[in-house]
Length: 253
Image (cartoon, rainbow, N blue to C red; front, side):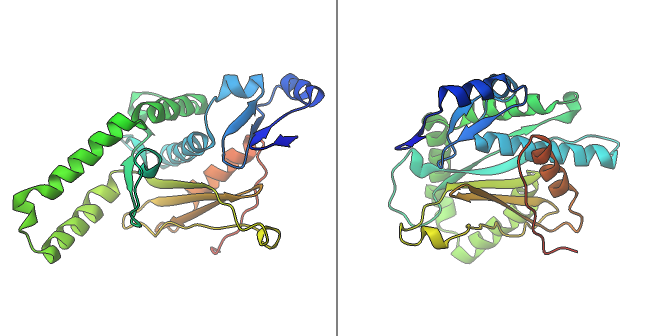
């Protein structure tokens, strides 16, 4: 039963789930976890965003292992954080900062559970008001620098674009954004099947992942400058392995 934004489970239904040895996670429409059976709590204990970040890191790690490189490289995901959650703003522009959850295969092998825990701890540490305020202060100080202010705008645009394509875009193995649950007008909800969201194609050879949900449908879209779909394949195979129903649509052959 659903009461307001909370979900109540009957005692019988809950007892059945608690006896299941497989992880079972129930979420509300805001992606908040409202119930985990003991197997899931022991195995993961993470939010939907943290779990999907871990799945993408896992897919990237498996892809790197398949390539059998002479030297393993760190695997990172660039993820935007909506600063409006912490600092009210009326701006219509993007008001975000970036964080980079990741793993370093050079330190040893990672199980999926360890990846989830790594992402979970990273998120808990970095997504807080004090550290986010520090990012804003650093960026604002750069913008107020008198030497930078006198540089013509077209030069600054060129340098920023060059820095992003040559440095920032290559600082991560993939990008991921989760817009969360979207609600439509009450009169239109019955006519809407789903919403889609896409990130732009990256400049470097990597994959971008965008997530959004409407009702009980969670949509995950990938955009990539790579011909092969190995990362996406590993990603969805992991979801299926975890017991999640997946329907795949693609514009690739």
